[in-house]
Image 1: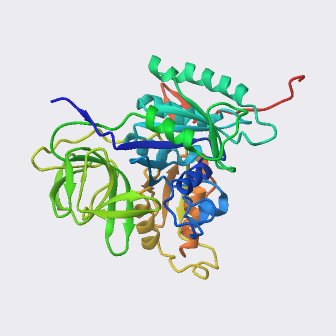
Image 2: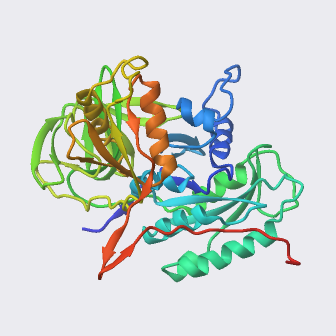
Length: 414
């Protein structure tokens, strides 16, 4: 049976290097789509609701939101811009059909721009290049566009990917234009570009099937599985099958079904293929599992995440002052918290050591691990950590360690 398209939905991911204005652009898109009341104060960095995200000014967790424009629902996936949180990017791109690649009009493409674009190209996403911050005094959109074209030539996997649309924006001023140097007062050119250039979801015929790309938790509803429905439809109280990493099937009854709109979730009776949904009732589900109808229990390919590059040892505080500052100080409490982190932080690895009081924690970078340390400290955990060290591998008798791309800007006369 042939696939069909659902024209009332677009699913897009917003990807960028850190501090290129991605989250600010999402803020403006939400405000201009009129999902807030006119007298409602929403502030800045709406999507960065985590305390650490607001303090650090970076996106750490991938998040879902949605807006409506000209009768079409646009599901938006806001992703982190720092390489240490690339695991968040890798696991949510499979929910999208296209992406907005946001690039600073002064800095141009940066190392993380290359990484996220490469991931999007490999997943055959349709890109829209958004050159942001064109209101700044030293912006150079024409030069940056040339650098972007060079990057596409290097990373494109098909000829079609080289033909990408470009929109110029100022997230701070809240406008978008198709030609630099022209004036506008809103983001209509960007919204129109999304509707015309991002393909609608291609739906396979068959019974319900969905890959779990994210997990959330609610004290009343329990674990919430988030993903895009690949085929069929799901309704509350349906019996479904969860296929885990061992290819074992577990039967569940769906509790509630939610779709996304604005900053919240809307409960619906049923949701159909192409939609991004959140489902309750799957208490033992993990990221990468497939939930499917028992009438057609077929697993989707699991999400592949890059290997960790840095590791640290977490252990019980053995200093003379141990137990004075924290509420959770024992190895049992530390172990439970670290293994609970694995449920949603799939770029992390936890290994037991020879000592029952210490654990080897591996992550994608120092920032990745430091965010975990700070989060646990604020939750009341007390523990000691070792100095970070690079993870080495022995290949053909030689020791290798992870490499990083370094960019140094110098004056032209040097």
